[in-house]
Length: 239
Image (tube, rainbow, N blue to C red; front, side, top):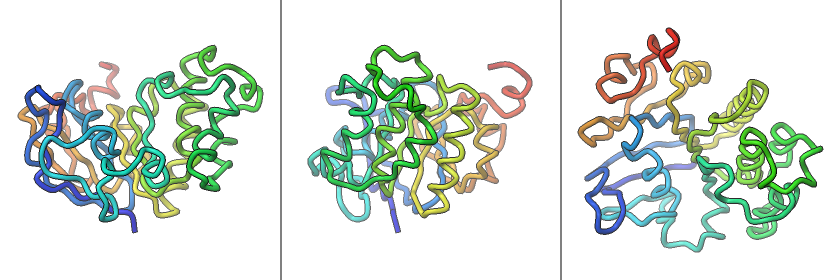
């Protein structure tokens, strides 16, 4: 059973004030939503969990190992991290090679059905850097999730996706959840997440605290106090 544990965790960048301090939480398989205002530390927290940034203090345990102590290639067998900027992680000149890159470097079999749901075949021979924002987002997500890792960390995955792409990704997330993955999604789209009926939310407050609770207990008041648009504000057209 996939599990993430944070113990006395402080995160941020060296020589700067910690973004979050002394965090404790434990989450297991299921779907969990990371919320907070812009600049609150959502991306930094996901990168720390993924092992891309070392903790300032404390530690993160992924199934009892510390991801930042592993080589990137080894950590990528267990943890999928999708970039908010889809162009950031591209390393190959063709889309098909970009998608296969993680399978080559990690040696995992992967799950090609994820690619088929997200990436049209007519994009396979294109250079990733020539793609539109929405196309690049599809390829960026597919090139990571094709590894079918136990833990998925998705940073604003619905940004730039069109309606069809959003539906495809929702289907992929639902299926992954049924298969026992641990999924954390960083997003501002609370009403869209309501459709997925998440298990828990992780909310970063204005005071730099992390609240972890059941999704059905998340209130509009709590969202507004944390600087996040509430359900009523989004549905009312204020985004």
